[in-house]
Length: 308
Image: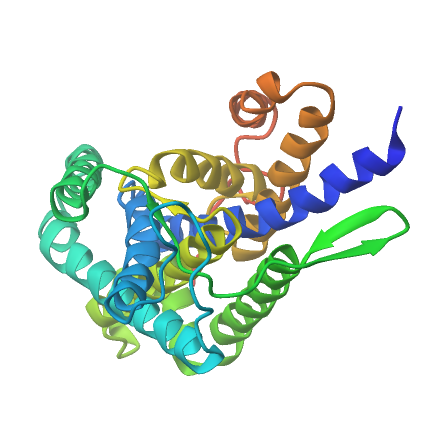
């Protein structure tokens, strides 16, 4: 057994799992508040990559048709593109909540679920109409470099992914636990009626939840596009499945659970890929089945809802 290669795979899995976690947190936040799986969330992740791609294209920061590297995007513009993509995806998330889910909030579980699938299909095929079906090369936000430590190579893009995910997840945790808006979100997740009695604007809080999750998904889309610089309108399909499994594994409704589930899934896939890349894609399905059989609430999830 080549332990160096195995360790290399595991470090790659941490970066992959960090992206899963950023998308999974959107699933888990919406479910924690509305008890709804927002299947359109993975397509917001796709939009995040395109919202950063188009400004770069308009300004000429794209690889040529033969794949040659274009001029690097200045750091200030990278930050502007990322913030702009986050804001655009937050607006899309708010629009989805207002137009698709809010009118069905008191219609039982089935109608919002079907609507979520419909919104997902709308974004996927609408994206193909607007963006085209062909894959597009993502601009060079960061020049690729690698660092060798004891035979294990660390790509700078992987380091950026892990650090960015850790900072954003930490900031989100602090926001939820130590701010007035975060306390409102937790109150709404327990009971709409009790939250209203305490003077909380339930609709605004739910919209904020969608906006937060969508903005993190946008960052996930950009980070993946930086690491694997090809984007398509259907890139959210695979990520949506993996992020959903990560949310279920960690405990859907738990933000730390989403982070833990994403990391465990990413590392598990990479470890299996050491022996067989063919079976690594099946890991997510096996984990999902195993969690549902052994611990449906997930690692950090709770099977009983608290009351206030």
